[in-house]
Length: 279
Ligand code: PAF
Image 1 (spheres, rainbow, N blue to C red):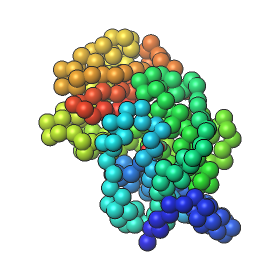
Image 2 (image 1 turned 60 degrees about the vertical axis):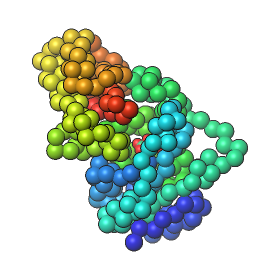
Image 3 (image 1 turned 120 degrees about the horizontal axis):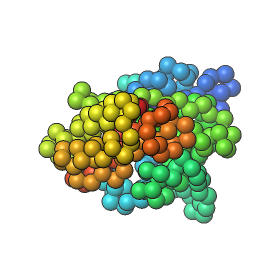
Image 4 (image 1 turned 30 degrees about the vertical axis):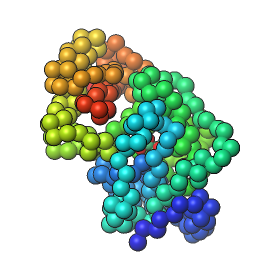
């Protein structure tokens, strides 16, 4: 049975017991509304740790848009059933007061990798992510933490965070899990209308086409201009960013002349989708 813990003192005691027995603790930080993408992280955590904690906390500090926070899907009962089935030891699901008690006054802010793309379009987002992830590492005391490559920039921000602050946790990045038609799994997909759901997989296909052009030596300016037009033609109504960035340090690149990643955020109706692929 997955034990649900809401209080960090209780969690600390539980984890201390595991660690006294020499166990390696893995954590999968999430905001709930779990899908197969999350469950693949859980499977990795189970394979690489002796005990697994999943955290569910819809972190208000990382939502720059209050509407997005209100609409974020929540279904704890369903999540607990999935975690139970997957053999997760503990679900840590603290309330907002447990994470941000009265008087809380710290922000963890990372420059560089957090600045372009998501950072430029969602002011304060990565401060919120870095702050809560630091707290979750402190609360869970896990030795390994599993993050999806779907949030590629977030993964780089978290790697920077643990290196810079000497946080004793190994970050494991796990591949994006896709629906059969190519759409990257995301908790936000449930908010797509039937028509938007038909369009959404184009995001992956357009990225693949652009990546092929870039691998063939096309300039980013050319490949990205065609890809932007393809997004709009497919029915996305706004492409917030579409960039070619270096794997090392997420610098924007004029061409794929080093290991690179193609990253996009675009809107379908009132749903903001993100995705990325290797070039
Ligand atoms: O990727 C997410 O679900 C969130 O950004 C995270 C890492 C759980 C922090 O709130």
